[in-house]
Length: 399
Image (cartoon, rainbow, N blue to C red):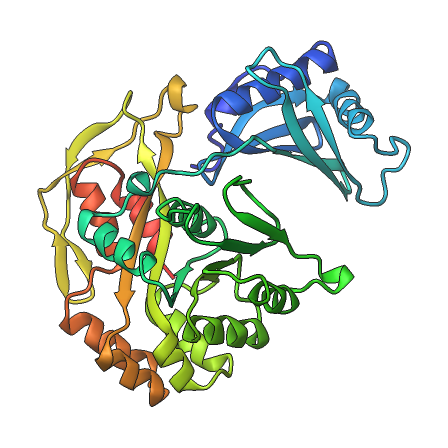
């Protein structure tokens, strides 16, 4: 934003009136726009309101300074917090009846600042599993992932940063299984979506129920398929890989940036390379990109070539989408998200590299030689299809 230039939200008059009404209106608006969080941030002359929508922060109309403390107190009362305590963080939960199809449940947390308490409200909407064919994968990647998931054993890892949709992808993979014929057991922290047809476990490190301990327990439950929410340490990695080696299908996630880094990271965790080489089936890297709002998108010619390493992915003059912003998308230009994916299947050539503890550049040479679709390439294919924008793809694929 240009210095001194006010945003659209700042041009609106701050909320005034009854704190009860203001809070209800804010939460209702957030739910209707698919926000995951509401941020109430104290400033010198107002209570700034921002919403996290499709993973990005969106500034909204502020709350007048004269009633900001009353709104904060309203949240704290509903969340059963101590309203007299403003010097230490607190958290709690609340539920609101807003005239929506169901009650809205929220988790509230406070954080003391010199200007007052900041409050973040996480909207705990009942989630549903995304259909596998609606994740955003191209047809070829869908086919190859299905083949991996339908095998009786192996280890498939999804990777990406926090909020990239890794766990949602694993849930969608579980939908591909005939759960009446196989025993599926998960170990998660937390359980994000409840599925009636499988057995789900909640890790509890304070009680000694760690991922490693839980995974050992799962192996005594006669599982066919095991989903581990995250590989967090060498012990969990070793047990999961051994399970895949001994006749189980194991699905899990890693906080790594791409497919190559995931393979290298698994080797670095300390499990014997030959076990990784013979257990690991495939790695699926992913990101979520925002979808251009259908109500206000426009097509414009690309002003310069867009490159990926030494190859032009989009030539100058290609028509690409540019978001404008309207009331339907809260003037962000985007509405909803979809996935972009990079898929690496482990074959004999790659297994030899694993056994040799090869460097990342060796894997990348093979990836380039085989013209394996990178995350950025997958993103620009969605740009050409008019789904998202160049800026959005660059934002999520820049390391």
